[in-house]
Image 1 (cartoon, helix red, strand yellow):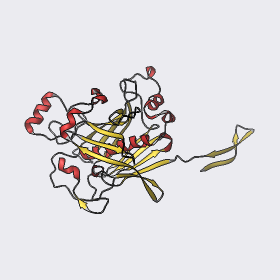
Image 2 (tube, helix red, strand yellow):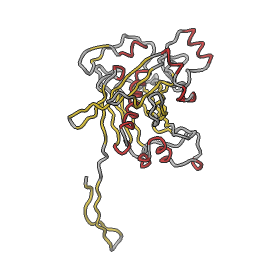
Image 3 (cartoon, helix red, strand yellow):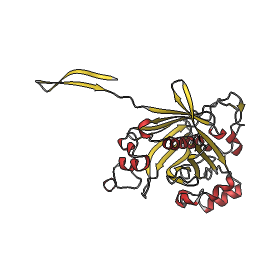
Image 4 (cartoon, helix red, strand yellow):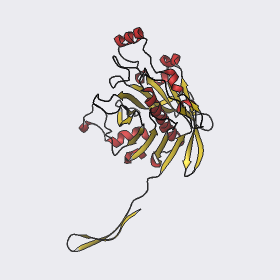
Length: 320
C-alpha cells in the first residue's frame, strides 16, 4: 500500500522527495476441522482452498498423569495445591481435570509437537472454579532435534484460570498466560497474558510489540534485551518483534461448533515443526477454556452441532 509519493517540506528552504510504502505482513492460516477432542485434521487455508497439513490426536489418561516422561524434567510438572488442600479434596471427592494431552502429527504420522497438561485444573477451596492462586497449566513441547520419537524439547508453559465477575455485574473471563522456556536459561519469559470471555470466547495472541517480555522478578538493568529472550525460544526471526500468532476459540454459550482458527506470521515460521508447535499451543488454549468451566453445572450441557453437521454433546463434558 502506497501511503505517500511526492515532495515534502523540511525546514524553511528545503524539500525532500519521499515514497512511503506499507508492506503486507504475510501470514499462514490454519483451521482445525473439528473439536480438538475429536482428533481432527488441521488444514492450511489458501483463499477459498484448503489443504491437509497436520492431524491432531487428543488423549485423556488420568492414570498415567503422575508418570510423565522423565526426560522432560521434574521442574515442569506440579501437583494441585498443598497437602492440606489435597486432603480436603479427597475428603470431599472433588473432581480434577487432568491427564489431557494433544499431539500434532505431520502427514507421515510422526508426532512433531504436543501439549501436556502439567498441572491439573482443580476448583479452588470454597468455590467451584479454577482460581488465579492455583491455575491449571500446560507444557508445550516440540520434537527433539535428535530425531528420537520419544524425546521432547520444552518450549512454553501455558497457565489458565477463571476470573469470576463481580456481584454487581459483568461476565466471567478465562485468563491465559504464556511463558517461554528458553534453552540454557534459568528465567522463563512472559510473552502473553490474555483474558477471554467465558460466554463468547475470543482471541489469544502473541504480539511482541504489545507485550512485556522481560523475565519475571528480573532487574531491567541486569537482564538481556527482550528480543534476545524471544529469539532464544522462537528463533532469530522473532528478534524483530511484531505479530507472532493468534488463535480464535469459542466460549460456553456457543450453540454450534467453531473449531480453532490460527494465524501465524510467516516470518516466524522457519519450518513445519514451528507451525506445529503453535498449533499445539492453540489446542491447549481451546482446551483450557473448556477445562476452566465450573465443576458443578446447574443445568445439563447443551448439545452442539459439530463441524460435520450432527448434534452431539461436548466430549469433554463427560469428564466434568
